[in-house]
Length: 76
Image 1 (cartoon, rainbow, N blue to C red):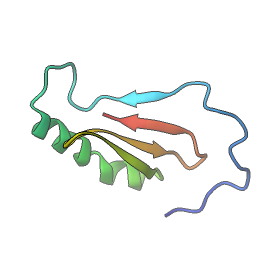
Image 2: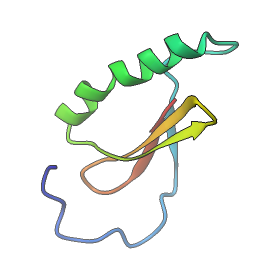
Image 3: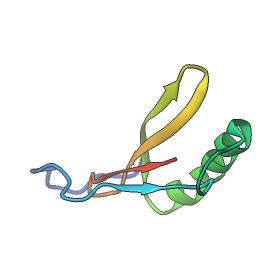
Image 4: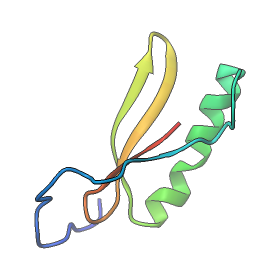
């Protein structure tokens, strides 16, 4: 994990970004999950950290991330 900025997050994000890796649906869910996971190394290299994975039953829904300043965004 990369070091965090000195200040804590003081307010809720004003904008929430969703990065949609698979484009518009309908999707092959296994391929969609593969595309989401394919983005992980690039985001970690850019300083992002994983907050949690959200699952819809046995299907990966999206992954919640934080940038180095603790702003959250999702990769779906």
